[in-house]
Length: 194
Image (cartoon, rainbow, N blue to C red; front, side, top):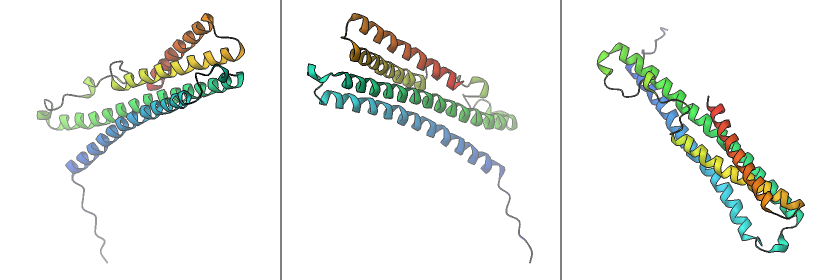
């Protein structure tokens, strides 16, 4: 019985299929980025809504145990923010890898057909940098870092309030801790993306 060989795949169809796959991975990275940051914002918003739905304004509500519990919740939200920052960085890197792969195909197509050189705006040598402070990904990271810094500042405030009455010094330490958290998270973003 003779064996039949499969028909060869057309070269153009293979390139088109690969290009389409790469484009889909880039789109997926962008969609995942939106979901990741939205999840963090919803988690923070839910906790704040729950806090304000309790007896938050009752002075007798803030026992040492409640202060420590709030501090723990805010630390958890800070850690969740750090995880979100890292995910945003990895998704930006995944998008960038997709763009590199897409541009590799375009470079090949342009080397085979010189008339395509004028057709593509983005080429490998004109691709935006992976770490770009004016990108949507970076703006989302800044947003998460600011909220996360606020969460850590609140954690610092509640843990201090658990052991002594709140004063100006406590507010200053909380603001410093929150600012330091924002800085560290943006540093984590930068290091994770590279």
